[in-house]
Structures are given as structure tokens and as C-alpha cells.
Image 1: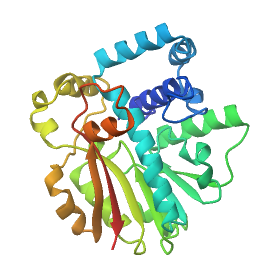
Image 2: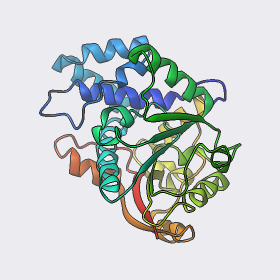
Image 3: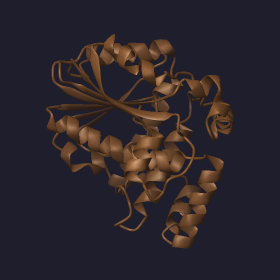
Length: 290
């Protein structure tokens, strides 16, 4: 991403969550009343109109045509990660670290996190804009959340530990959504090594892309257009991993893989009536520190 601007993809994810929130209460996967605060004026207008079924269907069709599969994949994985996070907290996590937080609002909208310390870590440009938007919409920042700034491609997470910003002695659950595909192989490995330093029983919830989409994007519906669009907004994907190698990859960092599902699988589970093609290369994995 550009070093002086907030992530464009973070804006899109906020839009997807805002649109999902405007669906009828019995048909939505989650409610995110905070996502609207992060939208541009244009996206806010679109979201407001989406309460009308005709407009909502039209907006869905436009998004599907421009970014096949992204909308359904995005909202389904949001719900999936919410549930994995709750499972990790039930299993003993006493600290939450959200890496590359973007406009993630879990610390606000998930009640079971309100009694836990939540640490959000992101690129300075996105982190600062997020705090500004929250200050404007909420009148202040939530007391249980700390917002830290770092560029994972340029800086080390250990710096935050040295500064006393993160406690590495307590069981922690990491949420690392929509980030690894933008980093170098070295930065991804360094991040997993850092997470591997936390106590046994700590959890990691993370997304990654099938490495094949980087080598041969035509193998996936919409893959070529997506990578071209990302290059145009200077948010290129640089890291992927073949799914069959994930268990071995995590083993090197002292972690055991618990789950690893593609967009096809978690969409089928959460959105059986809204199935669509696209984004099959996107995956969510769940691991635990041995």
C-alpha cells in the first residue's frame, strides 16, 4: 500500500460490513453499527440506499461484477473469524492482538471482548485515520483498546514488546486478517516467529491466499482482473502459500493447525442461499501454540 494513505481494501471491507448490517435482521450474518463511520461519502450514500431491496440487489450485482466473490467471501469470513475468536477466548485467551487491524471493529461490537485488553496494530496511515474516525463518531476511544502503529515490512513486532506495549507472558489470541498476502515472505515468517513466542495455548486466526493465484491467476474465476486492479491501486499481493504445506509451515513455529478452509467452504456454511463464484483462493486458518 502507499505509505502515506490508508488502505483502500480496508475501506471496501468496511463497506461490505455496512451493507451486511443493512440486511433484514433475520438474514444478516452480523451487525456492525460502526462500519459506516469509516466510509467515504459515496459509500455512505450507497449504504443508506441499500435498505431498499431493489437497491441492495443492484449494489450486490455491481460488486460481484467488479470483484467476483469478494462480498460474500468478506462477510462470511467476518462471521467465521468472530466465532473462532470467541472459541479462543473460551479456551483461555486473556489478551487479543489484532494485526493489520484496518477498520476492524470487533473490539467494539463483540461483547465478549469488552472485558479483555485488545491491542490493535496497523500501518501508521490506517491506524491514525481509524482513531480520528472513532474519536469523531464515539467522542473518544474505548478504554480496553490500545492502538499501536508499525509497518510490518519495515519494523519488528519485538519493538512493541521492548517498549512494554504487549505482554508476552499471558495466553493470547491473534487475529491476522487480510494482511499476509501484502507482505514479504520474510515479514510473514518473522510475524509467525513472534507469535510463536507466546505461551502454550495461544491461538492464531489468520487469512492467506493460495499461492497458485499469484503464479497462475487465470486458474481462479476473477483472479486475473483482481490482481490487475490491486496493482492499479498499488496494493499488490506478494505472499501466498499452497494449502497442503500450511501444516508443515506452522510446525516450524511451534504451532498446530486446527482448521483451514477456503472461501468456498465457509461461504457454503454461512451463506448457503447466497453462493457465488470467485475468491476461491482466499482461506482462513486457525492454529494453536503447542
